[in-house]
Image: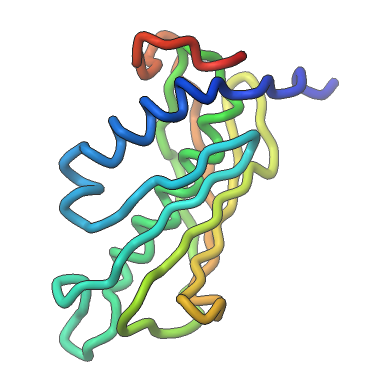
Length: 155
């Protein structure tokens, strides 16, 4: 039995969500922005700065892992009930190329969602479209731990 189809997210909710997430301390600190959440998909961007680089002057793997973690989370977020939250229980990734400057884009996609677990993947691309990393995440649904923005999540 497949889960029910995911309803459309409310545009007003999405506007409030982008403002809340992008103004929060961790994404702001990393120069990372949530730019798209839609049915089972997300997009997160990061402007590479000097503080993202490790001693060999390439983007630190932790910054790339954070992009994958964030993109998979928000892709899964679109599939859960308004009063629910998510927590990452597993993150697997492969680094495929180095990045040194410009912008990184993480594209998240839900692969499967259910009542208790969601499985998602993300690809990190550089400004030229080269695949930098790929990862997957298992996320646990937390009923009653939703993000309250005072606006209905779904249309």
